[in-house]
Image 1 (cartoon, rainbow, N blue to C red):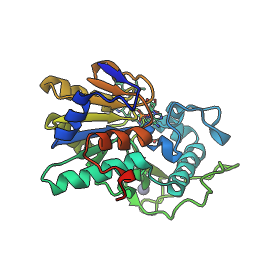
Image 2 (tube, helix red, strand yellow):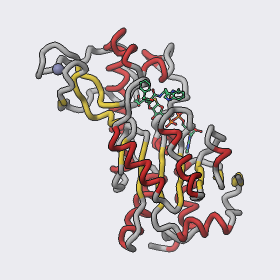
Image 3 (cartoon, rainbow, N blue to C red):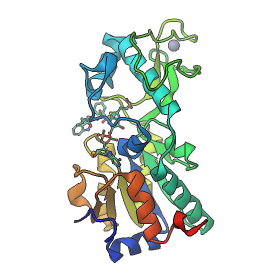
Image 4 (cartoon, rainbow, N blue to C red):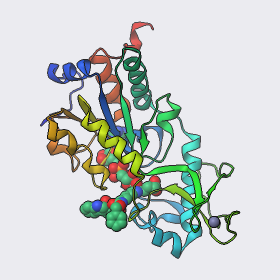
Length: 273
Ligand code: BJW
Ligand code: ZN
């Protein structure tokens, strides 16, 4: 594994891997949205949730014990997501995806994120492994439900919690966000599609994930079975760093455009285009 922290000295071997990739698979996590202003899961919570870790809140047990506390956390996070924009990391991947598609290749993006920033940057996402924060369903009967956007200002955590709405289908259950909590199964289709994208990839980019949460964290390991090159983009070492061929150290909003431009798969924005 080679750690790369000097952006002005990118190894030719890494640039060649990117330049020659026709079917790259990207696996993204919370870190890719960090430079858009969305906190990752390892950061300390604020406001109503300062006593809780994300791991305390993202469970069925937490929702059953205090539905309003958990519901309001999701509504506020959704407001924050709605209020921010995709960053240059999301945009660089979307642009690379378009260029490869036009040239007969395919870049697939599987994300653990519940936000829609890849899509808003113009990318097509193969699967959201942990669901989508803007989707809702009944916690009892499972009926899907449409809700208006949250009424919070994403920059100010609310002072009080609100109860989740009641389900209109069964009249009994509470609505919950369409995300995957600890102890719940991942959507099989998204997981299988991500696994297949890694198995058929000629390069796997792992961006902004701590590699702690299973089974998503095991996806990059499928590349090892075939000897496919693995590249991590993350400012820190992770649980996955040691299996990487290259670990590019830095924020993905800065590093992805730089890396893809240096490899020649994106045009340099400074070139007057
Ligand atoms: C930057 C950056 C910048 C910062 N640029 N990078 C095997 C072993 C042990 C435990 C288990 C196991 N298999 C299953 C488990 C249990 C559990 C689990 O994994 N627990 C671990 C804590 C050990 N897994 C599950 O329960 C899963 N279900 C399951 O396994 O079902 C089967 C089953 C069912 C029943 C019984 C038994 C088995 C479900 C996991 C669901 C995870 N859900 C969450 C919440 C989603 C909803 C929400 O958003 O609230 O998903 S948890 C949270 O973590 C969220 C994320 O998607 C997920 C991963 O986090 P991610 O993306 O890696 O972010 P962070 O915050 O961890 O890291 C950020 C990274 O970014 C860092 O590395 C930074 O350095 C970096 N970064 N700035 C680039 N600018
Ligand atoms: Zn219901």
